Image 1 (cartoon, each protein chain N blue to C red):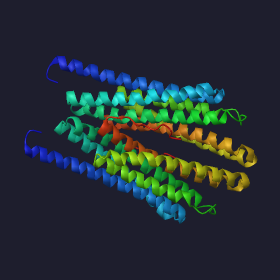
Image 2: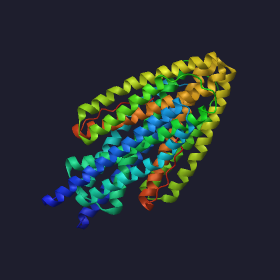
Image 3: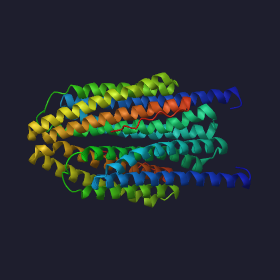
Image 4: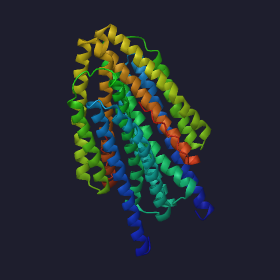
Length: 224
Length: 224
């Protein structure tokens, strides 16, 4: 980074990396939203589309990693930029796994659509919206080095865990009262757990942002 | 890396990183083994120990990342070594998450120990042993750049998924026949899913090793 010229190029490369990460995050958000819409509207075609989109999500992880490694190799950045790049390498994996969880939701949706609907979904869509918001904010916190936003994301995780427990309790009651609902209820419990995992990934991203900026570990351990 | 002296130091740093990763992997394996032993032997003290060990696991991830970043900053390695270091940064997260899953098992164990045992555990310990073996082999594949071993790990994932499905089916039958077993059976289903996740993480590590060595993406998408 000796001349203004390379410094400008370097900034452009970092911007490109940020854009790609945000784009991938947007794709993952869309996958969450559509998997839950497919569940609510019993739309198996849409569930199938979510499953198909996983390929793009996987490809984006590789592209982001390649770009980060290329920047590391060419620019040999120090301190702040080095940490930004190594964090990007970790975050791409979390986003990719979020895509996997959306695929899991879509798969359970396909199975649930083969049977009559057990109950209307109220808490699950709420949980999905919260998880989506957390992902968006965690990535915004990353590209802007914004630890205040990152802390907000971490706090949101408790509300998700509460909703998850509430859904579990409710579905256990269904199962106990009507054994005919057990298989379907179990699948809905899984959906709730997938959403909880998505929120965990978003929280992990936010924690990495805090560590990147402040060098402080604030890891949550209750990934139930 | 101009003199033999620095090249020797660099090798030492890489060895240190490998050792730390293997050590962390060993700790995670132990956490899996002990969480399942705590479940089988209804040993809540042991379950508590597993939960306590999570702190060391988290700390090791940070140490490994710091070491990798330090090597990147000081040595500015190219090609093969650069990829090894960026892969190490991703793998440390997978091992840390495996530790989290062992903690989840220990937490369900504490809850299950408060009620009479539902059934003897046969498939769950088998699944745990397989998952442990996969983790060990995936890390060996990493430190030795051994893609053949990595491919073996990926193949093992199917057997785990089969066992998981079998356990789910069996427990659904229990629940349908005896509604009094529903809460406990649900917790055991979760334990089975945690183990399946652990195997997924091991598979992810193995896939990264293949990508690191061969530049080939062999990602599995069925992370149910």
